[in-house]
Image (cartoon, rainbow, N blue to C red):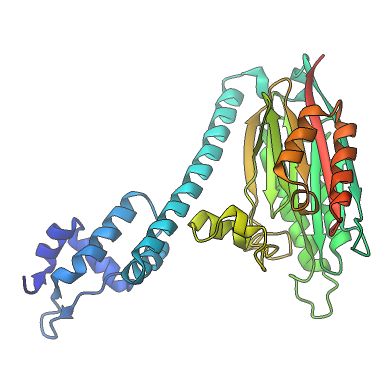
Length: 362
């Protein structure tokens, strides 16, 4: 097959001529030749695989800029392109689940369902809670902050010269919401608090270079409202749930190694010894690009036990030990004490912070 007109190429690739002209302008799919007199675009058969890939990726909703990256990778390493597509779709499914939770929450609010009206409606359920931190055995200062209250659990892991201040300010901003935010305002309240903390980090950095990224903090927190909890998460602090004897992680690390795991280029086992395993892709460091939090809603069930912790815990204490402690500790205070003791017994290379809460019937 020789050159194809734009119409013939559109039919073969299942892209419209209008789309082909747009993709040419964007540098995503340039024609093989443009007639210097008429301006007509001509394509060749060898361009069909890229064009069809563009069409498929547009159908799944991938942004055009990302499609260009995937197509370029496809031409040199098709298996790697497949892994990137898989990682993209995993993120879409996670974000869709978050939106589904939010829609359910809003429907309940607008239809008058009392379950979302506030913690006062939880007349048959309350929270037992505890929190603790430790400097560890290596770090000179403790930059972790943990908090547990009747409605709020929060853990923050500071870094840089002002790390302790940054983590403390992040948690303090959320503590202020514990009595003031109810019902449908809870997610907006969390998002606004995170934005204020990030702006404060940008304006108050004490690094010698004045770089807003010199200091900052990660943050993972849960605020109860009705029979649900709202979760806000930035960075690599984590939240776990023990339900029905099974422990699951309900946050996704915003780190380089986690992105590599998502793309299939690194295994979870390899990530534990990767030299850049601590590199954060998102944090409250004063940068608008890096501070976008995950916001989720979860149903709370009587008998649930929640753990929030910093990487000083989960990088030292293995998942089996975390599962055992959460499943056997008599109350949240015992769980916190035992988990911190295990981190110290493992060498305590970093600050340790954790908060535990149980949903119990009255």
